[in-house]
Length: 158
Image 1 (cartoon, helix red, strand yellow):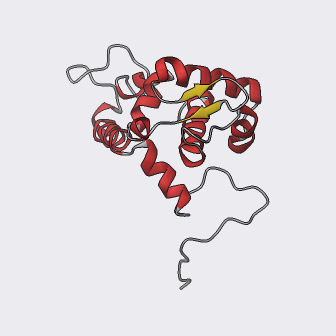
Image 2 (cartoon, rainbow, N blue to C red):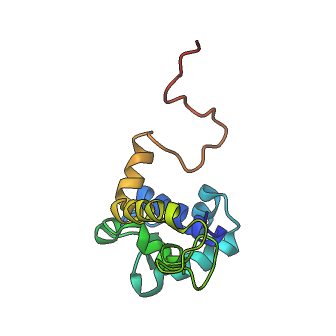
């Protein structure tokens, strides 16, 4: 649905929100491993997310690393998408047509319009903290290594 860069940015931000604080910073090696991303690629993503401390913060030195402030945890997921340059996702035509509009709709415009609105609402409503809490509570996951995935619900066989 999104570029690999944005997928990893979302995963990294959620992981950092779960595991860090201003007192406990996380190193890039741990983050890259946790989100299953190459370390150099993760570094570029974190560089974008730390620009102006908009989403992620960092500190240099022996006790340095990455962390997320309580203020940033309250940001909607949409902000990560904006930082990563994916905010056009909400504006553009599903078929990529430049002239698609209400007046000149593409073949999918009218059916996709409410779906696009639902996605916009989802990415605005869900905060970084909500996603981190869902993982912490075991209601969702980013990556599970060496473990069998838990079954959250079983369907009855008829």
